[in-house]
Amino acid sequence: MASFRGWPADALHFFEGLEADNSKAYWEDNKAIYLTCAREPMDALLAELEPEFGTPKLFRPYRDVRFSADKSPYKTAIAASMAGGGYVQLSSEGLFVGSGMYHLDVDQLARYRDAVADDATGSEIARIVTVARKAGLDVAAHDVLKTAPRGYPKDHPRIELLKHKGLIAMKRWAVEPWLGTRKAKDHIVKALRASGPLNDWLIKNVGAELS
Image (cartoon, rainbow, N blue to C red; front, side, top):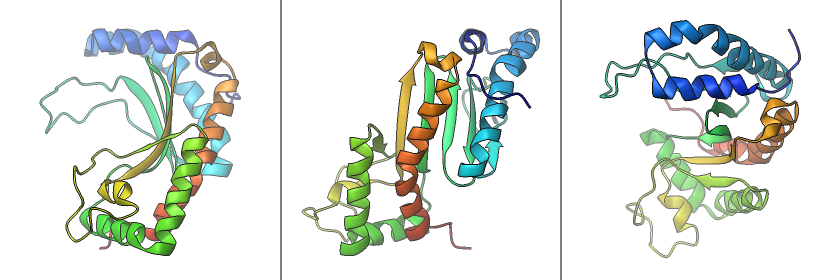
């Protein structure tokens, strides 16, 4: 496999076109561009990231429209996750890298809140979040309560983290010339390493859903 050299501009143009015409006709007419300019560079990147960040999983380009009001058949981005923690996505808007747990199931959320409330593990994640933000990452959740969760005081020293119903550290970049070069990998690796401690804390203290 060829080494990763970035994504050519045609990859971004492909996704721009797909946003404007999310149809099977457009996909079939431009599939070769997707494979050559978006998929092949992503495969090369994931192969180089695997030794440090774990086995990758490239997401399918087809949307599951069975339960969605939006019946657009294709995703307007290419994305992958890594077993050791991490997510990489390229779209016409640029590059996104993140790590953590986007959504917590009921039992996971209970363990998360217990760990945040605990003085030892809670202080640890608070420090991790501070360091991640100083490294230029955003730390957020897909859903945040407006007030304290039931059973926790509103004046808890880590109330903002307790309101989160997930936790991810992420970095976004708009389209820059370096996306078409090997420097893209440098940015990705730096962000993944910076977000690693947050992901490790979640794995240790929240873990997988209980069966």
